Image (cartoon, rainbow, N blue to C red; front, side):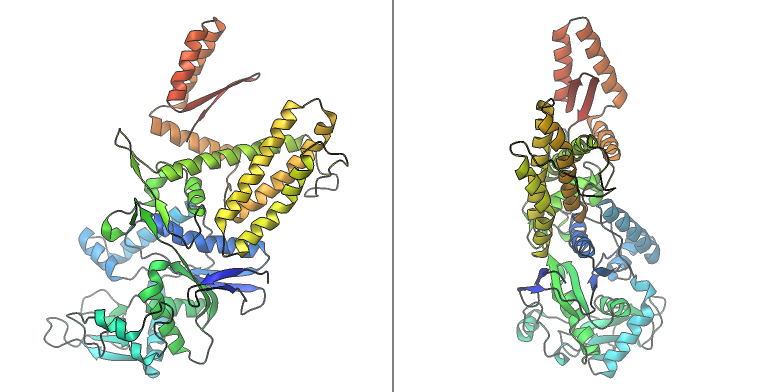
Length: 529
């Protein structure tokens, strides 16, 4: 196992990842509660485990990645009552939208994506086990509450688990000060939490040994993680907001059910909050930005790049700006899209230069041969290309340090463009002509390797260019045909030696964000991000 170290929330230290099964890493990530569409915070929570999965697989390890879908929850029931859409229809629709949105962000599909509604038997079995072990108890709702007579709930007894609070670093006495008992609860201790919520006849729920009801929020993850990963596994992922109480309760449930086993997870990693205009993004505050809102303005690859510019554990500032025309833009994502444009253009330049070398002498994928005599500065470029993939891997081994990987990518891309510029300037120099194409191939391989492990630039360049151009033209309120008509008018003015008119048309296009490039083969245009 490579020396991969992750910051473990439990120990508050960098911990080496030592898989419990040789050559295989098993990991679980808390997915969405599907009562609404996904926002940028959901995207960030899906991204950290995605980078980890990609890095582990690039290292040659087998990964079993489980990300759940909470499709049974009180929030879903409340939204269903408001909209009139049946709860399971609502949650199924929102789950599909979530999957579409994180797939657009470039996140890999988990190996298993279990839904709570499809694992009620596992939930019931786990609750029964906790009752048998004395870690949970059954109560009837207070008899003076209308329509809930004979409805039974099951609660977890927090004080039965001596190490409760070890993940969030909280003690029971402090927690008890802020704890409360709701109007329909009959808990033995205010700290206890629901494993099974009984419902009155006709309510939304499933049959169980305790009557009709539905799972509490926390028990579902313990049940599904146990179903697919066993009593203990390697890495548990989630947002920082889940440390308490959700993940604390997962530990209590799972480890109480299997006291003879190892800890629930060897390492706990949590991504930081997303702040919108200096305030934490939250649906309760009404300041959340939907992933689809961003995709309507910027390419999803730009958002992925932007999210990777900040270490996954740190807070991410997602600023917004309202333009004079009333349109909201996201400055950080706009700048990230320019960087993505630059990287696609860099790969295209390298591909064109590499092609001059012909196929590799030893077959496809062979290391490009460099001449013994290299022009000045080319040896440094070759060393950079050869060392970049290992440097990028080392940065990811250091707690998934994606900002460092992006800096390495930027360094290689800068060198690649310097090479392409040198080859263009010194086209008749035989030493440059011999060395530049194989060196371009090495730089392309280094850049491609580092981008792949971050899940960036996974689209063929022509496809990316076409979709971003169409989106940007739409935002400008114009069409390709309109731009081409203006370029034709400019060409006619230049042919008639009306250079003033031609320059005016070019400036008009540039003012609208259209970059015009003249070459011996003709005029092309590009819509800037």
